[in-house]
Image (cartoon, rainbow, N blue to C red; front, side):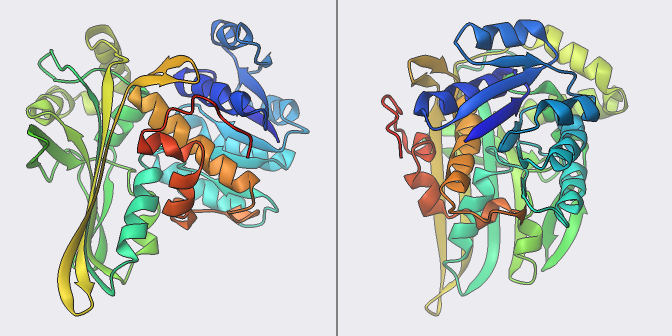
Amino acid sequence: MKVAIVGAGLIGHTIAHLLRETGDYEVTAFDRDPSALDKLAAQGIPTKRVDSADPAALRNAIQGFDALVNALPYYLAVSVAAAAKGAGVHYFDLTEDVRATHAIRSLAEDAGHVFMPQCGLAPGFIGLAAHELANRFSEIREVKMRVGALPEFPTNALKYNLTWSVDGLINEYCQPCEAIRDSRTQWVQPLEGLEHFSLDGTEYEAFNTSGGLGTLCETLAGRVESLDYKSVRYPGHRALMHFLLEDLRLAGDRDTLKAVLRRSVPSTAQDVVLVFITVTGMRDGQLVQDVFTRKIFAKTVCGVPMSAIQITTAGAMCAVLDLFREKRLPQSGFVRQEQVSLRDFLGNRFGQLYEGATLGAMATV
């Protein structure tokens, strides 16, 4: 399968490496940053410089590929999807942006190939796992989805390190959040809905953030009384972010906020991804609750040290692409994450990263 990976940053680099290692994918990376491409070229991965913000140039560059994986920031998602449509190429991305997903869905309406956004951790894996749990109930009362990408060793006042896209982080902290309350879909405010819980002896807080639900509100509409998604952080993080975004009014000046975070908050590869889902409802005449949890830590995959957010985000994208290649997913139109079977995902060679497998020797399927 011939795959164009657009965006040679941390996650795009990881996706390219994982796919190349299988021997089942012919991968080429596209970016406008020559230094990012040089890192991939040094590993023997073909690269091509292209302005990803120029849909016409990108459309011409990806002609002849089977699929495009978009690993660029959320604000480029729609233009890259339009380029994929123009080139007749299957489209996959990692966007958490609700408006971008709606626009991509419109692009897919008359397309003869697949458009599958939100293929990462959250949205992505969290939605397909929650959907699988919800389907085990005859009556669903409540679905709670919690995800945290956290430093394993928090040291600063925010108790946070940068582990993924700063643009994506700011976007999910600033945009309205979908939820279902009293069986009705609603918009709730980011950073609100603060709650505290503990897991394995560690205290956490969680609050509303945008995009993590993907299309699950629509999929479960009319079947669930309450559904929400919250980001998990260490206690105290939310109060400081509220101070920056609201009191200092940086929610309206994202460039300044981005500069502050990049200058002041270090990145780390020593991280942990926490997935925590609870579903409550009726089964066989009884009120019961099912819980799904995972903790994924940074480790070496295919001989390369990877952070937990690299493993979970790139691993989810590769698993979904692999299942599509194996024709276990629809081959045209708009595809939701919850159309992926949790059993198929966790049984996939890439999905096994969520079960603690190392993928040390990635056998060809």
